[in-house]
Amino acid sequence: SWLGPCFVCGLTSDQFCTDCKEPFCLKDFNAYHIIKFADGIPHKWLTKEPAELPDMAQELKSGEEYCIECEKRAATRMCIECWDAYCNKCFSLVHHIGYLKFHKSVAFTRAKLGWIRIRRPKDEGDRFRNGKTGEETDVRPDEFKSDLEKVLEINLHTHTTALKANEELIKTLQIEHKKVKAERDQLFLAQAKDNDILTTKI
Image (tube, rainbow, N blue to C red; front, side):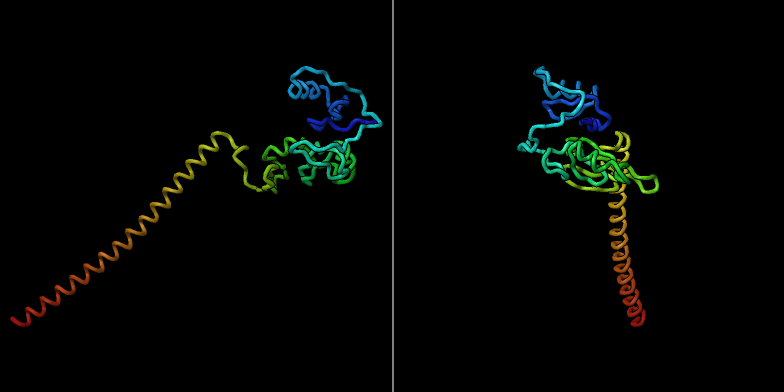
């Protein structure tokens, strides 16, 4: 029986954990079990996936979803092109031919944490999808910006806001200026008229 891609990194796996029921490369097997199982209880593993697996349609844990293909196993991979969730076995089966084999995936748990960059050709530009909210955008989220970029954007926003405020102030002053000028002209004409009447009487 063959081994699917590593449950963590998606690359070639080396062993199958019979407790987690997932394949791992050597590096991620050790790292994952040290973080996940700090109690030190060792998990058993095989160098190949067993032909007969226990019923894997067990009740899902909080935050988990069933594989979109088999609808029996918990999803472990998220295709960042289709944005569909698969178990390792179904992802490999569905994406092994045609254009689908060029689709990339990330761990399902990683996809659900937040923003994912979907790389595109340079002339198209990358897209970004938030696995938690479902939002998708061409605008780079703050998570992908450096501290310097964030500071520059804040400064730009501050200056842009101040510029708009100054433009509004200038418009208001121009209106006031026209109003004062009109009042002055009216006063001048009224005074000139009074002077003409006075001259005529004299």
